[in-house]
Length: 113
Image (cartoon, rainbow, N blue to C red; front, side, top):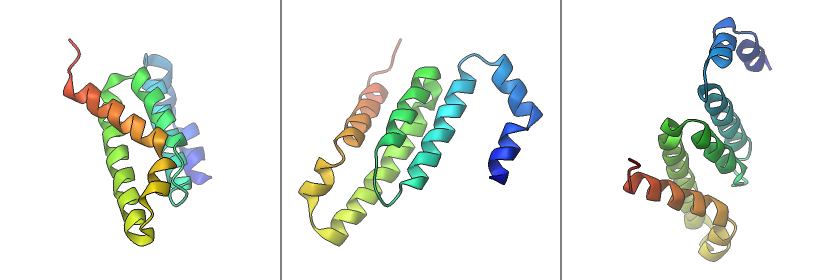
């Protein structure tokens, strides 16, 4: 709660949100993505990836944020696989996350001109 109050009442952040074009949405969605990923870290939910993709649509420079989030998510998936040895169940539950990872990798491999 104190962190949220600090963010909401920070005058520089309010000015940044007011004057920027897509940067405000990208910061907002990336913060929401990070918060939802940390809140559901052990559950391995994929709501964070939808927020990260919305942040990319707002500002394309956050593409690397999705790559980092996807890499961390893959490491967590591999760690869960090593512990449970049930790869089929783990990867079937993570279809959306794997689709976002492939989406990010395809965009990085083909630059937009």
